[in-house]
Image (cartoon, rainbow, N blue to C red; front, side, top):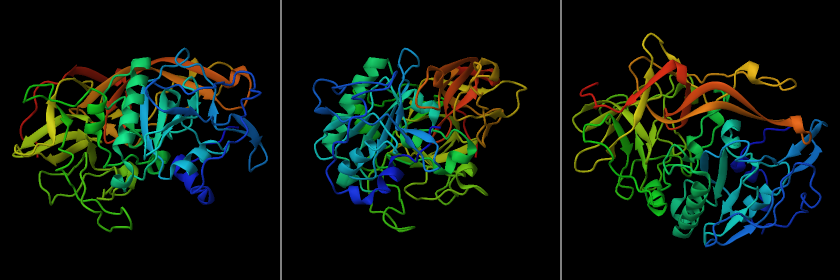
Length: 453
C-alpha cells in the first residue's frame, strides 16, 4: 500500500545528519525498471538552463508495519492520460545537498525539480510524464509539476537570489509553453495556495514559498507582468502591492511571536472591517474554534497574495472588501499607494435557490464512474461554504478525474477514473478551491459595489 509521506520540509528535516553533506549517488532503481516505470537519462529542461538528471527512486520496500510499500512517485503517461494544469512553487526549508539527498530516498516524498539558490542550477528527479508526491493533495499531484527552491521562507535575503528567480522563471515558462498552461496565479501557484483534500488535512498544509516570495518580479521574468486589465469600477481586483515599499508586520520568523525584521512582501493583510484595528479575518478550517488568524509568517488565514484575483464586495474610503473564505475581508489600498488594480474576468455565485454551496479541495468522479476493483473515493467538502450573493473569481472548468495508484505494479493499480461531473476552480481564500458547476452560475465581473461595511 502506498504511503502518504510528509512533504519535503518534514522529510528533509528528519534527516539532520545529511543536510551539510553533498548529495551522494544512490543506486539507480531504473537500471532494471519494472514494467510501466519511467526511464530517463537526461534532464527535461530548456536548453539555456544548467540542468542535470538525479533520479528519484521508484522502488518497492517493506514498510514499518511489515507490509509491502513503495516510493517515491508513480509512473504515468502525462499528458496523454491526464493534463498538466498547475506548476507548483515550493521551497525546501533545507539546504540543497540535503534536499537532493532526500528526494533520492525511496521512503521520502518527491518532486520534479530542485533549483539551487547560489547559482540557479537545476536538478530533475522525476520525469514530467510521472506523478510526483509533492503538493499534499493527490488531485494536484496528478496534474502538476513540483519545483523546489533551495530556501527558507523566513530568510528571503539569504536564499531568494536573482539567479534562482531567473532559472525558475525560464523553467516555468518552458513548462507552460509545453503544456499550454496559462501564466496566471490560478495555474502558477505556491505550495501555500494548494488546498487540502479534506478538512482533516487543512492544518497540515504547507506555507511555502511564503509572503516574501516576489511574485510580481517573478511574473515580470515570465514575460507576463501583472497590470490593470479592467475598468476602475470593475468587480474584480488583482492584488498588486509595491513589493519593496509594502512591509506588513510579520512574527515568528525566528521564534514564536517575535517580530520579524522589516522586509518587502507581496502579501496583503485582511481585516473583518475597514480599520487597521479590526481583527484579522477568521479561518475556522485552519485554526478551529473562532478561527482567529495571526500575523505569523506561516499563517495563511488572512492573506491575499500578489497576482491573486478576488471579487469586490464593497468599498469604503481607502478600504476595499473582497469575498474571501465565505466572508467579507477588507484591505487598505489608498490612492497614493494602492495594493490592488482592477481586473477583467468572470465570477461564480450560487444559483438562485441553491442556498449555501459546498467547497471542495479536489474534484472526484461520481461513484458509478469507478471500474470494478477500484474503490470509489468519497468527496468530502471543506468546512467552508459560498453563501448566496457572494462571488469568487473563476479559473478553469474541468471534469472530475482521479488518478488511482495504490500498489507497486499491475496495470489496474494505475488507472485514471473519469467522471461526468464538472467543477469550477475558484480563488476562494489564500488557497484555491473547487465548486460543483451545477451549484453556481457564471457571470462577467460587472461593477464593484460601494459601501458594504
